[in-house]
Length: 185
Image 1 (cartoon, rainbow, N blue to C red):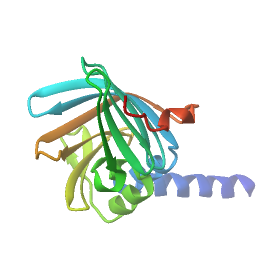
Image 2 (tube, rainbow, N blue to C red):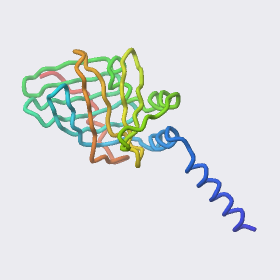
Image 3 (tube, rainbow, N blue to C red):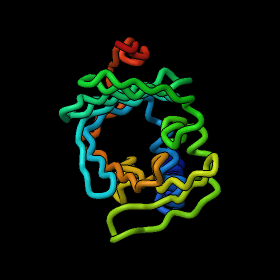
Image 4 (cartoon, rainbow, N blue to C red):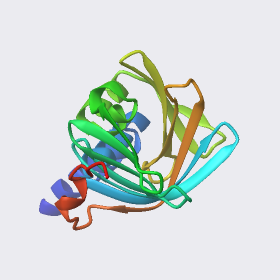
């Protein structure tokens, strides 16, 4: 009898998972993530930049660009600082007024995805087009792993910005001090 009950629950759960919507699979995978570190390639028009980032949910990020300007992006959950370490340029923005604010707000992103239907692109990834604060953000998830693999936005100058992320590591131990906003020089 116990074997039959176990078999029933196993088949029931397998059947439910197999036929769960893509959106639910992506959401369930995303809910398990507390932080994510990755390398990225970002293209703005025809110009590409690379670097690495750490996102700590909710709303914290630290990105270091591998370029001559040594750009640094940091959010403490409220503000977003972009610092050009070579020329000492320093800009602060309210996080919720940036398109990155949605990417960093896992709960809000999940609520938006729950109302959308994924589009399969090139048999490789799923696309969600999300409206937030008047901005359209295209968010991409891997077809097989359901992991976040990038996003597409417009910057404040209406340039197309495409960010592709790779070498993803989830739920690592992170030093929380990296989310302290850098000070102007």
